[in-house]
Image 1 (spheres, one colour):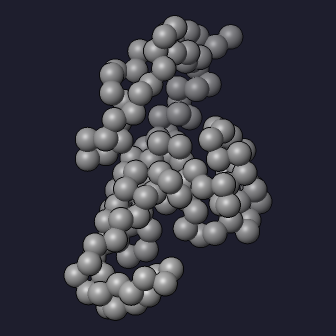
Image 2: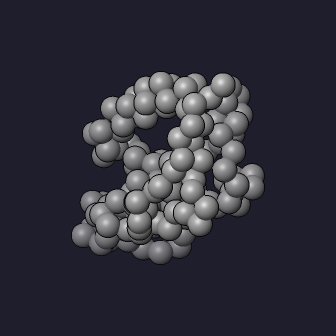
Image 3: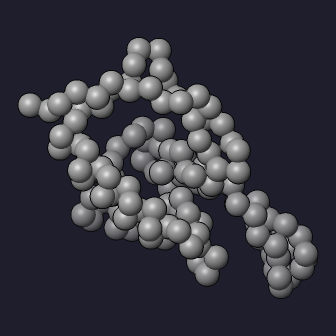
Length: 132
């Protein structure tokens, strides 16, 4: 979700005039929020290109900017399905991971592509074997 957010870019329309980084923005202008770039920004993340789930454990995120991680957007226009998608992913992983070891097939590195949402360009083929 951090390295490959479902919506790597979102847009917002300026409603009220304001200045951002020295640039005057007027109503009607469109802002692009590059979520994937934010999720990989060196000033927000230690080792930003590395997959490290421990960065979300316990107090690891304390002090992190509240908008450093926004896979479903943020604020009043956050994705309506974010809570359900997160709950669904946790439930599926809680059942599968204790029972199965999942390994990608050789030469099956995923290549992302953007089609409204970010997704693998080709199907992800994996080998599932019982844990034991």
